[in-house]
Amino acid sequence: GIQVEQSPPDLILQEGANSTLRCNFSDSVNNLQWFHQNPWGQLINLFYIPSGTKQNGRLSATTVATERYSLLYISSSQTTDSGVYFCAGNRNSNSGYALNFGKGTSLLVTP
Amino acid sequence: NAGVMQNPRHLVRRRGQEARLRCSPVKGHSHVYWYRQLPEEGLKFMVYLQKENIIDESGMPKERFSAEFPKEGPSILRIQQVVRGDSAAYFCASSAKGGNGYTFGSGTRLTVV
Image (tube, rainbow over all chains, first blue to last red; front, top):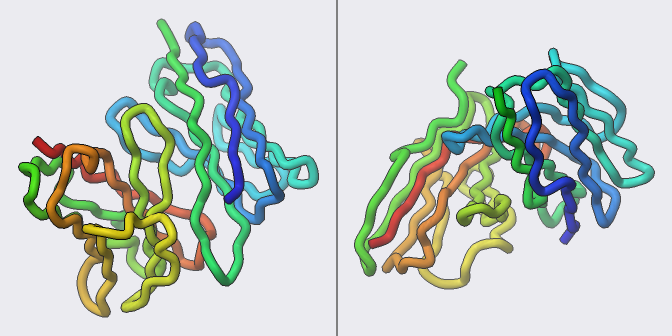
């Protein structure tokens, strides 16, 4: 299956700082999503972004499909942004639609 | 507009017992996926189902694990004769089309004692 590499694995920020999280794929993907898993374990869908750029409040994401990577930008971070950020993708095919997840970036935002 | 509903949120089973995990997809979604998350790891795909059909079960262990998505009612992930290694968080997701734009449930945290 597709290998997904996320960086950095861990990140500590002071409130108000900006950050960029990166996701590399071993092969081209048709579907790409970013998720936030909060400290209570809940998975929140942030972006469905197979290509291009999207913005939602303080978060934005850019996927460069031809170069097999995606970036998640967090601006003016808040303590509620803490948690683990996962990217995941797949290649739609008749044989399967499994999302392949990276190991995540663990983010801690301190007051 | 309820999201993906999973129950129970927490489940404790003794070794050798059966565990049944339920998942009701987003209304109108006919594609359901089950994933397992071990502590401090990413999610691993287990099975993809549409109504009454298993489409892809390449991530399911060969023994003790089964899944169904009947015409009526929730999707069920069933683990027979649980062992300590089955302790994990099990997440269900649904989508309107296969593989596009997942919505995850809150997960069921299974503890085998």
